[in-house]
Structures are given as structure tokens and as C-alpha cells.
Length: 111
Image (cartoon, rainbow, N blue to C red; front, side, top):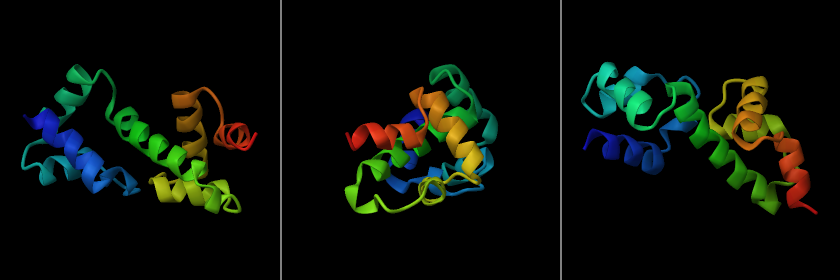
């Protein structure tokens, strides 16, 4: 189904790491249209397109933050690597998804 292809595309190709990702980019890759993709995200996955993409980005950032070899990197690095266009949008999305800031998350990991 289109939903499975959408999820597979996000998980295997890591499209969410593209900072300027648009729903039309995903539709083109899946040879579908933005309306169908939008309906799947809204109705089947119960979220907006930005929440859908940000969930993947936050999960990716969490994996990076868990990597002790990256302890000396700043939040801008984690933000950019995860596909966020700005540090502020990263901080906002991370807190919305996890309930804490990425800094606090990293601090708790190191305890």
C-alpha cells in the first residue's frame, strides 16, 4: 500500500534528513500526488505532515545524542544532521515529541 511505501521511504532513504523536504518531494518519489500522501498522514497516521517528518527527525537526533563519540558536538550539529532547518525548530520539535529539551535528554543519558 501507499502508506507502507511512505513509511519505508522515510525509514530506508532517510528523506527526513533533507532540510527543505516538502510533501510534493515525497509524492514525486512515490509516484503519487500530494493529496493522497496528505490524506494518509492526516487520516491513517493522525498527524500533520510537519509532525510526521519531525517525529523521524527527533528519533534520528536521539540516536545521535546517544552516541558517546559525538559528546563534544553542539546542538546545531544534531539539528542539522537530523534535517532541521534551524536550531529553534529542532528545540521546539524535540520538546514537543519528548517533553524535554535535547540538552536535558543528553544530560540524563550521561548520568
